[in-house]
Image 1 (cartoon, helix red, strand yellow):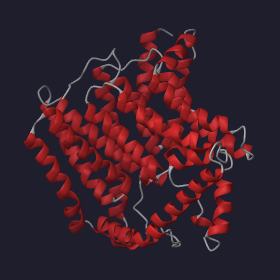
Image 2 (image 1 turned 180 degrees about the vertical axis):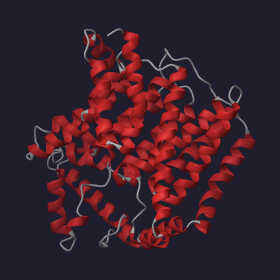
Image 3 (image 1 turned 90 degrees about the horizontal axis):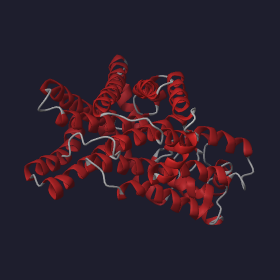
Length: 414
């Protein structure tokens, strides 16, 4: 297959990925397999490997696969270990694919952005329709029991809310980029961003809300230090201060979510077990992972044994804990430490820090993605499930091609 034709097919496979991530595992798998096959099955694969090794970002991302792989040398539960490797395989194959001849033009990037925003917008509308079609008061009351309204991604509100925040960021960028040339697209993009911000507070998933405020913080600092537009900076600061107050006063779901967080704070702080809680159980699981790492600081338990060793720890420290509350450590950072010791934790942190040492166009967009990714992985285990791995590496590879590739001229360096 000729290179231009192959690039075109790869582009449309990427364009369909957001819909696959949100609504269909079959579509997601087909898009990933098709993209990787077109990118890697050709005669220039050795040269592609060399480009991968020379690219510190892509090569660093593959280490997120190789760390669990190497831990198989001291893992006892090989079935669990091999299952985790299958889930993490895109961490190896997608960076290799993005190291190939595939390129994204500025026009294609705008199209990809529209597909991404459109898929997320459809997901948010689906969520609201289900919310409004049910007993709203019952759904709001469920927030007092650490439950949230139904979402796409097979009800994975953590990753969905992060995806919503990324879509809002893209919508703001698209509105700024098209303002002089296509005003109607800009207006539609800004209105979409506004809706997604409102939706994030209505959904009240903390990963998405924290991601949003990190993005506002980055935008505020960037406008002060680089753009030097105090009016914009003041507007961003005012928005960041006003949004939670307005949401608390007007949205029962957000208000109930905050009440639960306040109620669980003492349990969270003192690591006391509260059956069915969210924050307290998560912190206990993180403590379990931390102590597993401390018990084997050089190697960890091995990724195949993290879950079983954590369950053994729960049995000793919290014998009253319900089986449904027993989970792997609730932080990806700690999972890598528990699975591969201090070397695993340090390498994981270094890999997440690498992007901040790159010269990039639109630094506020690039930094926002990586800061929110690091935050999300600090309080959740997004790289232990297929959808989380696919979302992270897809956006990482796409935005790297957009903002760092020398073959892609600046779209608008604001």
